[in-house]
Image 1 (cartoon, each protein chain N blue to C red):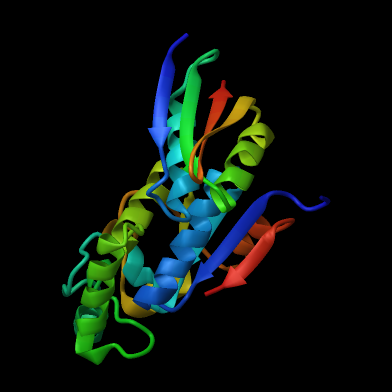
Image 2 (cartoon, rainbow over the protein chains, first blue to last red):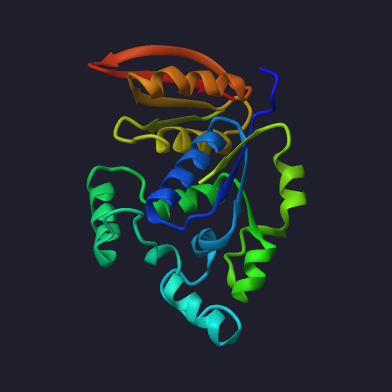
Length: 159
Length: 74
């Protein structure tokens, strides 16, 4: 195999189901020996906020308002059939019942496996979010050029 | 040299690999980990990825039904 064992994911959506996909791929790949990078941008940034529920994270009136409605990992909506936030609760229940890792467990596994978490500088600037608003495992704040450098030679997915 | 056991027969992807990787990373050189796993993806890929990551796979044995035991040494 010519290419490096490296997987870089762009986590854009912030939806519960897509975050499950992102973290399943990321932790699975890291566990079988891949170097894994996740670049969080726009709605994806919700997944790495320290405050996992709804909170006025961000600067300025509009930033804070957006921050509140976007929420964190625990308030991520499902991309289809969200039913005003009922579906993520049902999914969490089903995942626990069927002994499939929940989103929170996958994120914890990602931290333990040393997956590289990066945040998008531009999206943070728009939303008025600081690096200190994120979990401390977030390694760095990046732009496109650095992400391309980091992901070079591996596979990249946009989720 | 110490021996450790891990049962991932009730786990699903990706936790089968994740739990194995985390247990393997705790081993010291010479330590042995016995992993109980089921047929299909875990049986095909846990020994393979352990080898790729530089561990010795000492053996794969059928236990019961669709459960197998993989013995891995660091």
